[in-house]
Length: 71
Image 1 (cartoon, one colour):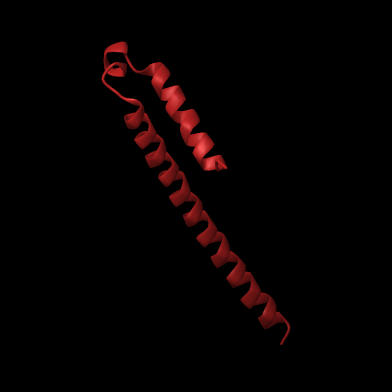
Image 2 (cartoon, one colour; image 1 turned 135 degrees about the vertical axis):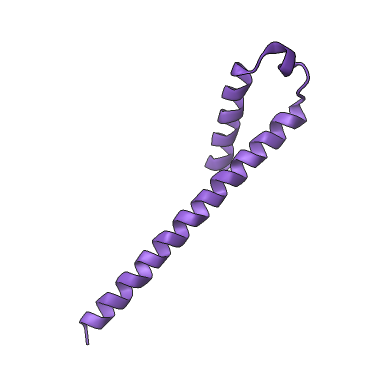
């Protein structure tokens, strides 16, 4: 099953293929495009992890404040 990040990465690669010149396109293989998709997917995953960590920190801070109010 393909993740939404993977689908998005492949969509970006597909869009990239449309804008590169024909002479460059003839040099790049399917493996190059797949590697690009993996790099994009890794970047998306990294950004998501950063956002999840920030959200977790917010939730922890809120939990501490709620607990302090209950005392």
